[in-house]
Length: 111
Image (cartoon, rainbow, N blue to C red; front, side, top):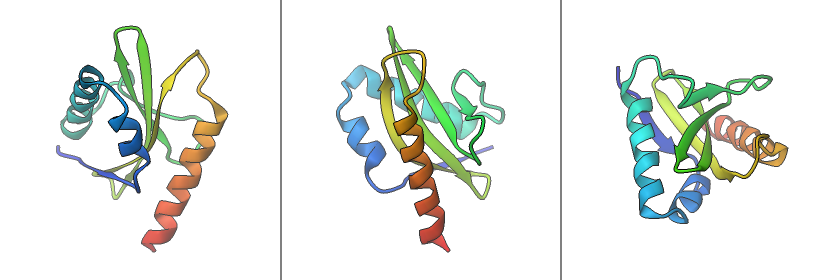
């Protein structure tokens, strides 16, 4: 099982470039899991209830929590959208709305 990860526009890369080296390493580690593990544990990849195909890649480092929104395209392609650092229990609605908007744009530009 091998998945391929791509970035839609620069939203993820903008977020990634602001993180320190240790956080980037942890993000890379989770990406390797997503790419190679057949059934990725929900601790690292979770479908967002109430969305049509939106997932979040979950990264924890020290006491910080990071989320990167993504979707699947043709099963083995993972498309990354925006990422952010969680400050409290609830994922900000604005971040979810942004990810849904980006996902819609991605599929529109493809067709």
